[in-house]
Length: 189
Ligand code: 5GP
Image 1 (spheres, helix red, strand yellow):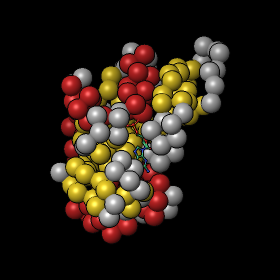
Image 2 (cartoon, helix red, strand yellow; image 1 turned 180 degrees about the horizontal axis):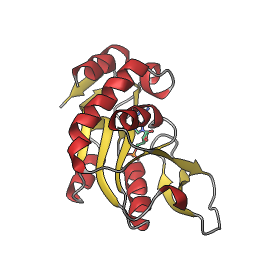
Image 3 (cartoon, helix red, strand yellow; image 1 turned 30 degrees about the horizontal axis):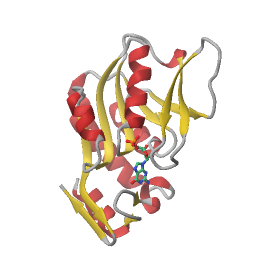
Image 4 (cartoon, protein in one colour; image 1 turned 45 degrees about the vertical axis):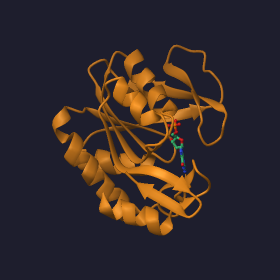
């Protein structure tokens, strides 16, 4: 997606060889118009795949996910990051290791927002090691539902997440794929 590539090049900042800051339009400030166009791209790719619900992970996945849900006219659900386990039968939970914080959280989904008939599209802002996406997949599959696809705004293709999800047979569609990051360097695939 050319517009996203240009935005990353003009406003993104590589903190080091593995972390990209895009605070001005995706993770802190939000460029709503760009998010709307991101929603259009995801709709074009996933429209024919029988998706019934859009899932995302709080909080930076919400903006692209809500625009995708709007464009596809589907319900959207935000998976919550809880600090501890909830011991009742009303939620699905799984432990995820955070790439940016270096700590674990309990990814949480209320059972009332999923059924075994759902075919879920998971949307997230970044794909790095794939821990967040895998956590979301575990919750969907624990509920007996299907993962119909994974839509990523920025994939860091030099990290293992993409290959791992491909190897497991998931349909991953990323709007920007980064080959290399470094000081003052952002290179796309
Ligand atoms: P993963 O679970 O794939 O290792 O990492 C994905 C999650 O970590 C995303 O939900 C995103 O919030 C965060 N993340 C991973 N890499 C980056 C990065 O380079 N920049 C920012 N801003 N967030 C990242």
